[in-house]
Image 1 (cartoon, rainbow, N blue to C red):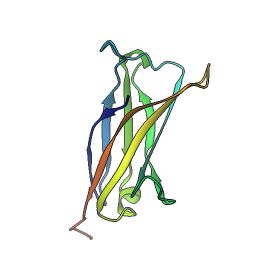
Image 2 (tube, helix red, strand yellow):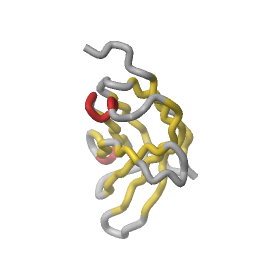
Image 3 (tube, rainbow, N blue to C red):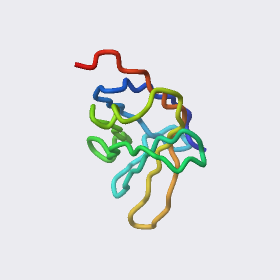
Length: 113
C-alpha cells in the first residue's frame, strides 16, 4: 500500500520535493535499478495530466526519489486541488509499485512580472 503524502506547489515557481521510500519493515528501499514516474491529475479519470520530473535521488540505497517541476511547468497548472502518485518500476523484473500518493495543492501565482 502506498504512503499518503500531500504536496503544495506554488504556481510559477520552482518545485522540488525529496521523498523517502521504505519497505514494509520500515527499512530504506534500495532503488538501484528502478525507474520512477509521477503525474498530477484533476481526478482519477482525467485525460489531462502533468508529469513531474521524477528520478532516483543520491544513491539508490538511500531510498530517495526527487520530484521537481520548473517554473514554466508549474505556471501551466491551474490553481486547485489535484491527485498525484509516484510509481517505481524494477527494470530487471518489470514489477511496478505505487509508493506514494496524495493531494497536490497548487496555489495561485500573485507576482507576474
